[in-house]
Length: 397
View 1 (cartoon, helix red, strand yellow):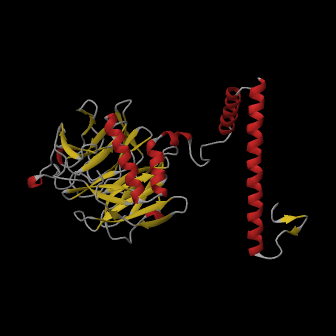
View 2 (cartoon, rainbow, N blue to C red):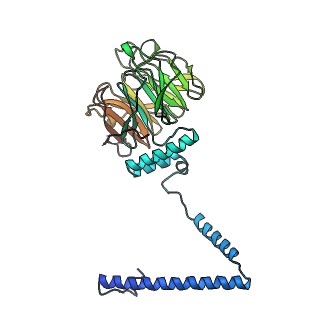
View 3 (cartoon, rainbow, N blue to C red):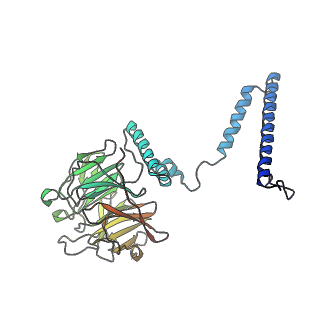
């Protein structure tokens, strides 16, 4: 404004060409003035130093102090980011990956792995969930919209396994082995070595069970047959299992999720598989006890549970769709059926559901033993489902 106008009159009435020429002249004059000021400042510093009034060292020290003070007055933290997020590697890296490209995400992941190897720790960069599809296991990144096949051979059952991630490691437990018999195995995929290794097995073989991470431990609940009421917990640090009290109800193909430090198990199939179950119970690790919760309005024979926004969501998928979604409000202790969350028109087998940054993510396959084919994301603020491109990527090691 100051260059373009003076007393309300344009300085460049002759058009753009004259304006560019005049600007070049003004810039040249400013550069000459800046050079003269630098020469005068150098002469002043030399005179003050020679007279003993101000030494060069004192001048430079005061100049540095002024510069540091000016930087300290400028906020370096983005206004839309919490300070705790800045301190977390996962938060910073995920934000960069969301704003960047797949190449930048892989570069960040490679850097994280390099640092992790030097520290002997597991890298935790992007939220990833292991998804078992028949005899294959994929690493699903809801934020990046990618699935990556984990390298084999995979020492797991054919299907009906349960999986969870803890501190950068992915745990697969149970499943139907040869002859469709339940297996007690527990196997872990280590990102540092990009390999599977066997861990101490469960006390019983399980299939159609749940596996949930809570407080750095792995909670395995229910299943089919005689183990439908049992539950046990694996401590990765101690490398040992411990038995939990029996659940109030026997259940398999149920949903389980961790919310506010407690474990919730919901719905599932009755032991005889004749009908669904609408019961809900939760386990308090501090007390070591189960507590019955208000039942769901519907019976959900096959479902997934997700903690989202301080509430418990249960997605029922008895067939190749998501027929109903029910929400439990912990503060009010009531269930609400969310009709707008149903995906009844979508043909696909729900393989996994996850919550990340206040959004619900689900991934589908065309059948229970087919590759992952599509991903949907639900935004609670707009109450709209969005189909997100799902890209198959090779695992970057």
